[in-house]
Image (cartoon, rainbow, N blue to C red; front, side, top):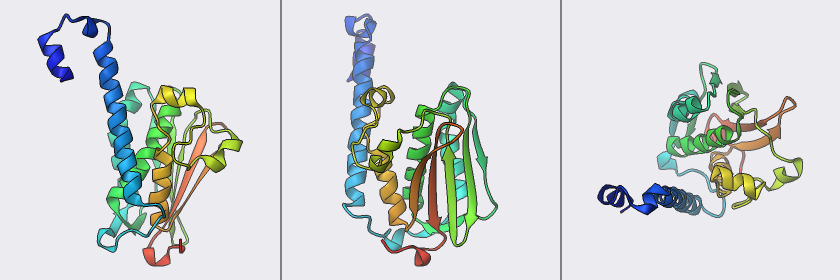
Length: 212
């Protein structure tokens, strides 16, 4: 309907004053909110293990590379370099669709809060029967008092900042549920040099996952 209005009335007052752009932006935000709510509902109240039928070998380095490539346009617009440092063998057993969603959310947050021309570093390492991914930005970080609540659905560190970036406080709640479903762990830390580091650890095999 918005596109039709633009075509039929190109000189309309609403177009000239940016009203249609605002309506379109609100529609996008509403669609994202609905999608996040549906995802959170599908993941369930408790972080139940991933369905066995969805489990397959997943190269975390490939997932991170794909997610980074999808975010490249936004990164280029703000002159942000996404730097990936990875090992040769970072394969786990998991649901590639859910894992992609989780890392998309984390990288999206890093881009939102990173200053222009400041890099985002993604480090992938192998631990004992686990793969660790650390995504670090150069942004403002999160107040220490807020860290214990950061995974609570709809929790906002700062209403003004959240309104500016368009978030609804659901992204990290979704990420946590996905990570827990894979028997993994997630931790947020303020970096001594500034910015935030999101550290995700995932078991190589669901059989070695820590019980929920």
